[in-house]
View 1 (cartoon, rainbow, N blue to C red):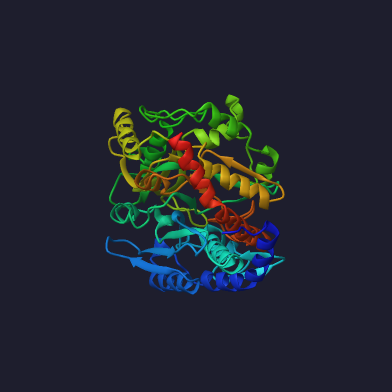
View 2: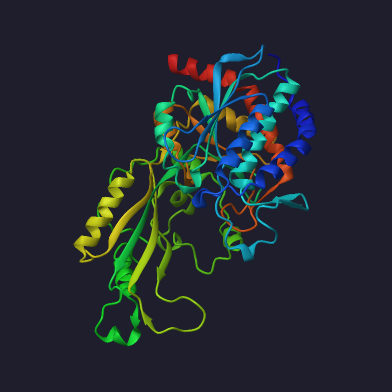
Length: 469
């Protein structure tokens, strides 16, 4: 199959963008909140229709519990290579839109302002799915067919930790078998470089709870009654010190140290401390400063323990003198390769028992292992090279993201290299109010996927030759 020049792909993409934007806006109107079990059947039907309208085959897998998984297949064209297959991973569920009062527009009524499309889920992850389907349309029209087979796995529980995905992958791993995978997310940084990752951190998401009484009490009894809120705060304080070091024995067990190549890649990543502080409105110095650590290395290679939320007693307007009957904390631990979320749970339980907090209960809400692809795989180099062709400011790629997703089970069960890239930008605000993408980035993302796919068979052929050698 003769490959079109990049400029031709850009021209064909321009023709596709208006229709793709209209389709995306329709998709965004569905309030597909997995945490609230909202609009799941409607969204599955919409996704199936999008696939079929793009010329693909769709199959809904719903026999193993949880929200359905959608499988899609697009065959290679007459001049393509049917022996080579690329898998796209996406999800159709989105985060809840709260707090609603901070949105400038209705979260599920997409609006375009100055070339920016605002809606819940537009960056995470509905925009990327539509962009990838648009890239398929571009190749079908521009090149008369696809250069390889293309598959999709589109799930509906990513935003709640993909609790039911592993059984589907295990049962249907032959259906999803591929040579490589493009993951769900990515976007441009403040310097307009496309940021990509070849792996992802894991997670142990825990809930710590303490119950001290059957009812809330008048705060005057605090002279002789223990306080569940203080009890929980004191328990939490034993787990991390003033230098932000995690003190739970066994927490760091099994960590696989980064290679020299991975360290060099991370040290080459751009990082603007001042811009970061401005972006988030930070009020305190970075916690890496006190120990002289590189924030980039910490972001990629260091595990974390974060208190995500605290709940106890009265937090409404004005005062209420109450001694709370109970207290609860949500704690997420981001993990690096080699750490096991079940082991983290047991370590935290043992730590609390050892320090006298036997009454603080620990429950695991989500556990996922970390994953890193082989940084030298030709597919990864191909994605980088094609990104540099398309994006004027170039690209940067990290060995793994600071965030979490179910990448480990893909890597282990399907045995393939994975790169994550997408159509977001530095102000996309995924999971936050006023989530957005820029239409110009959406268009470039389509071009990149089409350009990457056009050369994909050659990259996989090179990978096979490298393994044989």
